[in-house]
Length: 293
Length: 304
Image (cartoon, rainbow over all chains, first blue to last red; front, side, top):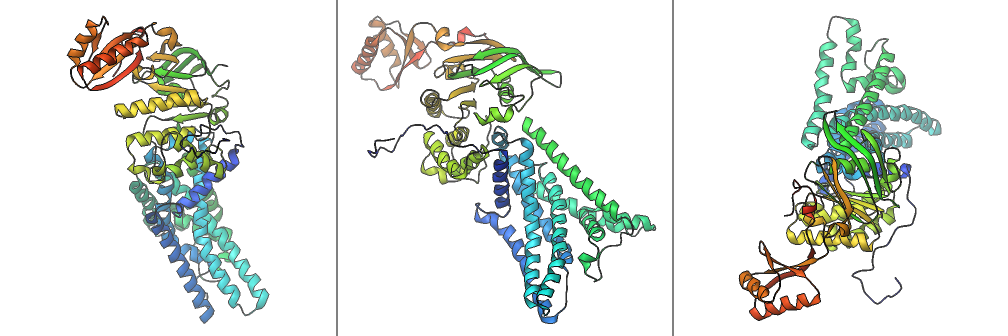
């Protein structure tokens, strides 16, 4: 438009000839958008309250543990035990975040606008899943980092102490990742089944909490095998079981801990992998159906 | 170049419900009206064109591409406006259209620029920063149109774009679609169950019923040679009819409208003169083509 005469009402339609990004960048944009959504960024103040409340609680707990440790020299909770202790908060966080990510889109009918674009429908679900996993991992890993920094700066053994602390932190972060993967897969699948956020949140809490009594019942059965396999029944104890088997002493750091799974460690690992795989497959199937509507 | 082409396209759901039956049609770029009663197969056809549904049999081409094998390629060049409510209420129009622009592969800053451009073209200005939940139906339809336009497609698929709009809103939406089709250089397929509505802006009409093709042709070829003028006055319709008849104009009634065949520009003068002499409040005077409804099967709903 060469004539700059101050006519602002209509400069005509401009065709776009610039670059169009590929599938990877679009996936990345959707992933970034999802991650922001989980923490309420770019959304109303109301949407920020809950996620940041949870973040505040876990951070304060981590800071408290660090303070106790630096003053009394006593490790109250190891990195992994911290993740276990925070599991209730993680469950509630998933119950709010997962419906926010997928139920809202189902309800508002915005999905046809996504699926009429080049992005394959599976990518939509996977980007949301990756965003939720990352958010959960940050939720647990962030405070672990706070604990690590606290311990590293107050260590009395110089660089050697920092290094040892780091070796304790890494399995903790790995364990947090395990929590994130399992909880995000289950939570997002449940949330993708309904457009009503309250139902989705209730469903997620139910899946995680209703299975806990089952573990309780099975672990007092008069059979050692049943007792040792009991922890498969609930996602939370399943994660603990896998952690105990795979990381063992790295998680408990010589303290009392871990759960009595006997020699069934590999079973726990296989079940966890199958559970995640099943959740992801069902999620993809679910979106195949949604897209065709 | 052929815009859309189907060859014996058939879609059955579960082997029992037939949505499309042996549909063979080919249309050139322009503004295409896809008309048919509810359940005629319009939405199914659109989903097949977008590659969202696989056809049971037959072949389909969009912009020279096959949506069954190259869905991403097709969708990159097509904008789709769905029939139903599709907007999250808590986002602003600007945010939503920007996000969807990025989903079409636009870089971040380009998406933001093109989103406000697209919203401006559909007539949303400052209100684009307010949450969509507070918009009127007309504004929501405009947002849906803007998101279909944001990535500069070569073809727009609009599913019932005038749904839920009042008469003024319909006219505005149709004028906008006509502008997109003529000035923006983008081909448009407008789905509607109201033939009378789309015939005004389309240059090609495709009518389907029960999944079968009724007729596909250029509108010019369908309409009869003469055009008519529609006159509406708020009161005194009878007097005006008598006066026009006295002026040797073959006037006919259509509800509250008076229809006068348009011979030449002089017809306008005669009508305006008559209205002025009788001192009647003129509500509207516009030119329209003969309805092409009668060219289609009698089952076809004619007009509003």
